[in-house]
Image (cartoon, rainbow, N blue to C red):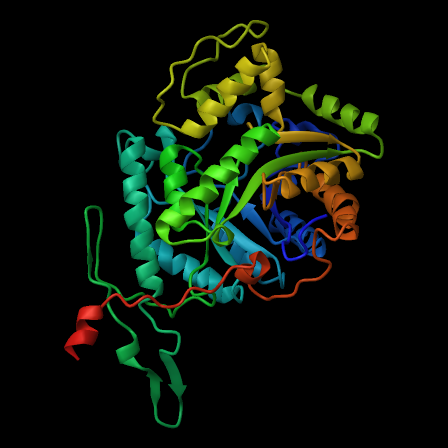
Length: 446
């Protein structure tokens, strides 16, 4: 039986029409709805109805080169989530933002704004941006290399957290009779001077409701795991097998002690794309129907991007050719995709089918009970603290998950039946950080 003190966490990972690359072609999907706010409000309210912890939007600062063959809608996520905050009450709101192509002051301000506007529901998925096209949209000829991106990310986050902490929690007095708005001694510059950033501060908005927005990270390379162990509170990850997931879970949790943290300070949430049917055969038929809509030209372009190698002309019915490792792109995803192809001796065509549903995340087709069984097995066997749920089509597949799978998990005592907190940190069972004193020398001098 599950430890009653431990709670399963479920996050809805939202893409425009769903996670299957051919979702926009499915007859149940109206692809142009993804250009409207109402589409995303409907999805967020469904996730909230299911008592999910949060919704999450990925982001990229470049138009995909293969947009000809796939529905595309990429609203700026903090803007979109601010609108969603106004029409929801409980669901957490996680936005992706790059430390490579942003400035700490501007991003710290944006997330503090979202946290206040939502009453403490903001989360930041911290990415270092592996794409070449993104660099060329922000005044760079080439992307920085992998190590430099993570070094910048570490300093970026130090600056952002210092800015959030530049206001004490009680800095705002709002004494109308005395005419005093703020205690200026409780608002301090950060005077940061580092390798990548020089930032004086303080921030021009008070400390976030949560102290800091929830900090999420998705890199699974060595550098990514160290960065997560140092700073992240939730990790979105991709594994294909229980054994690989258990190894990742042990590895990442085992690194936390080196940073003075405990295993409970970080949640590991692998991706899962559930294809749900009333029977197992119906689920398999739904999966096959989606795969029948795959455009190989699009799939090859996606595979090329994942492996940072041009594979657009490789034969579909032969094995994946040798691909040089050591990419400066997404290293963990490179290893996962190549490992999957080699381990299962897949042709390129079969590999494209395996990747179509989740780009390397695990696709599970079955009845609601079978989906719940897999979630429970990974949760209880040391592979996950919860899941990043990736509906194959939207909004229909999320409706199916909330209406059919969540009740099974609730009956088994694995998942909440009501929200028992107001903030995203409370949903995830994570403590609110206290203000860190950045000026001990001033305190000593006083």
